Length: 242
Length: 368
Image 1 (spheres, rainbow over the protein chains, first blue to last red):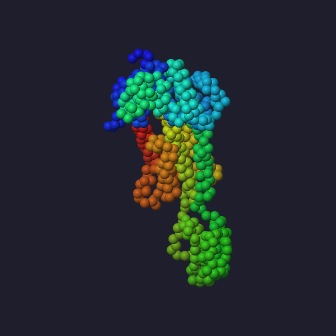
Image 2 (cartoon, each protein chain N blue to C red):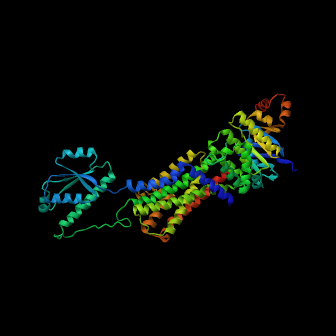
């Protein structure tokens, strides 16, 4: 495998009894790429993602994340990835700094490193005045951006975002994507699932999963051309409806 | 290790910033022990009684004096007609009425037998029974005083001695019981709630994706509660000693070790509950219904196991609390050691092991 591939997946399959949630999917993601992972509810997105982040064992197939095997090296994978889920994931009863300290701590960062990284994102987000407030008192949009910043605290090579912008307003979503771009420019690979088709347009490449299989995988532009429509929304509807 | 300490620090933030868990942790033990110690008690004190003295002679007056002199009873009023008895009970103040038959003294000295009727308010059956026993005791003492001069042939005198708790102080029963409840509550309920909370807000997923091992996550979650449970146990014991004069016949070391064993079994139950419940509410309901209720009702804390139906007796045997209460009473009241309590300890140990293995298995299945 060459070093530019952040994620490479070959015939990855997950079965629950007779039900095949993920059916022999294959794809590769380049370093620094923003990879959109789309699909209707129940298409198998989350299951596929869980195998990649090392909390679910594949039934068969091969996969490497940040150069590590998902069967043998889950511990190493965990150290090298960041993860933010659709549910908001900072502690409401801890302050912004305490959250950062906690998450930095479980990734084994030193106090100094944590402080440095925390101050960095605090200045970047311009939130010095609320850094010692409880996270519970902040508006949802802020929380989401903070959760993203905290998930980057250990400088992961790959970040998995599971519907990160669920329930936030369009302006915050826009800002959130600017943060994603910036991170990708720094060389971090972004693996993102989303329900919003306008967000799919922001991705470098997107894959669309239907019933456990990847039905389409290309740049948004090529996909639109291929299906002869003018938006990702139309591409998605065409595929998902069969 | 540094990661682990960070994790535990975070747990303490959760606990100390949540008023409700603070209340359960520190308010509850104190409230319960005081409640059970002072309010919920089987003893009687200054119970109001009424007297209907038809005789009004030397002997009846002496007896009435004896009764009113005891700390248990207080003569509320004298009544002069049997029709008053009913109305007096309906008012509810008076718990018992004593009726002396007419010519009480004469019958006692001439016929050697005189009657007293004791009427009690049995809407509170326990109190009623206790009142009858206490009055009976006073009468017997009085009788014994009368008979001192006369030698009665063939007399069987039953002399009872209450061992270990001679004054039948109910607080001695409640301290071990409350301790069991609190340890169960703190260890099982609080842990199960705090683990499901992480599931509910989505942080559990983040923790599992992090380099922390699942076992570290769970240990980190339960460790603070082990610590807090031990503090609670100490607080309850101190309250028991200093406020209620609870005896401590046996060894502290054994008591401590047995308590830790029980705490661990409760924690394992808490983890087990958290694996089967998705929300904090579910975890709380399961803990309350599935753990706390059996502990209160079936562990022998309030109701004696021997007087339960057979099926419930069997059920009470599979509750860890039943064995822990036996152990606690053994150590605190009887002062016995491991030589006597090894069987109970072994059973508790087996149960703990079983719950730990089961919860680890369940937890692993969930991760798959």
